[in-house]
Image (cartoon, rainbow, N blue to C red; front, side):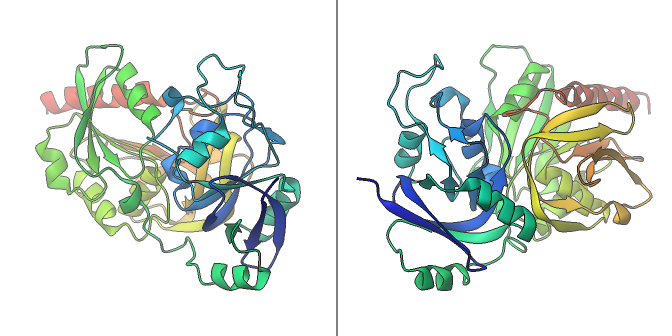
Length: 373
């Protein structure tokens, strides 16, 4: 017999469904995701730390999950909401599948709710903004759920990068034994594994360091370049990261992705703000202002750099075609650029993967200029 579960938003709107995953409780900011595939990469993306993920696609889980496509060691989201969940134990149409999505969520203690009207929920979040929510299969008292979710802190003001980062420094070894000729320090604010794979494909070996690393510690590793990763939460409270990036600007080439992009903007003196419901999915059109090319991108963020606050030393390079928000910037007087979207494309289209060769080219150019300075 199915176990009833409720999702209560902090505005008092309640949605009913059935429990899946770990049939317990989850609380966090509730956001909707418009991608129709790539659910495994999404639920294991550390950028979703502390959030309840609402998948808008009608059917989820049909090709199972496998250990090779995880972006982190396991799911990190607070909870998962789906309409129709494929729950058979196999056989799956994906040849690498080893377990169902439900089994994976249950094994990692991630609470979910299925058979819920995700269309109505997504429309509510679109019209009223992302809101804190609580999923429960244990407490079905709506008044109790509402009281508890209203006590939960807003995502704004939360430094979650310090929770999603690695504990220690480690080196990433490419599985295809590509011989690297460049060394990149990757500052982990909530790193996706695919970023390391893209660097390896460009013959870059990576040393991954925790989010709170100091600039002097990064420079002591003698990197050819530094990559600022994606991650969860509000960038503004991450003063340690902003200070580190300021200490690196102009001294080593920098490439920022997602939260790393926002932190670069703050380090330059720009400001960030919270979007009403963020950008989450694999179908967001972005205009490259330099080439005039439109790229369909994978995105996952709730904050944005305010283009009106960019200093004269920086300029916008990419613009979102849905809402005109800033999607990329470059620094004019230092080798540094960043994008708000996910060029590693996991999940998502591969339109923007050319930014990794661009990073390599910037490093080589900087090395040549330094030699002849």
